[in-house]
Image (cartoon, rainbow, N blue to C red; front, side, top):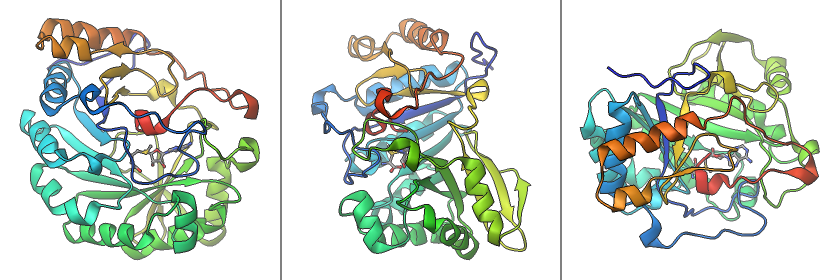
Length: 328
Ligand code: SAM
């Protein structure tokens, strides 16, 4: 069995695939200030193209796939795509990150297709605030989606919650309570700079350490281990079924353990969330997939993976990054 190791000795076994750049929400911290330029449909990789690349990635050591977007559930062939990836090999760990608005409708089909785990992005438990953050999303849709996913017993349901001071910082304890009540894993994520319309980044940023102190005011947290792809540090909430995690891309860079590469919906392989360059694989796929050439392109992306992300945090120097396009 092959293993992909980059020049810094990191094992790369995780591929995040953004399957669309369309989204049905307009989260204020995610959407770029300049608006969103969407790729035309023909520019997006089709199922056959994505699967051809995933086969090459799998045969070289990729074992975990995260389907992301945009909003992946907006893609009409999403269930078929999951099913085709699942067919590559039963040991493939396939998960999806979604805003959850459409999950109630798709959860059952996705589970049957082979989706193992779900991350649902949810930044407020209060309907009005949720509407404000997402620019018109309906909290009830997401909550019903989470309940449906729980009924179907996905092997893991994680909620992704980006904490922003002045926006949802005051809801942290409510989220811990939600984890206790439902048994879902709540993952608190540090807000990362991107070209969005929020402004005043430094004042809005909350470090994972500060988040943990807030949670500790009311709950006792015990370090625990949760299966997954990423660098979150997890804690069980003492005496309950609750589990929470903290992801700290800024306050505690975890690049030395980074195990991932990303594929955008228009066929670019990106080796770091904040990279400025990429390796195009669409041309190769559209010529008719050539395994040797695709393998070389995969290796080229891995070789270009930087030791660290070069994120600049000052307000007036935000680096280019469209989470919407690259999928977080
Ligand atoms: N639509 C899907 C979803 O909502 O999960 C997938 C795409 S979304 C861009 C992926 C993740 O990126 C979400 O959990 C979102 O909260 C996160 N995200 C977007 N902008 C962010 C930022 N500036 N800082 C931290 N996380 C961000």
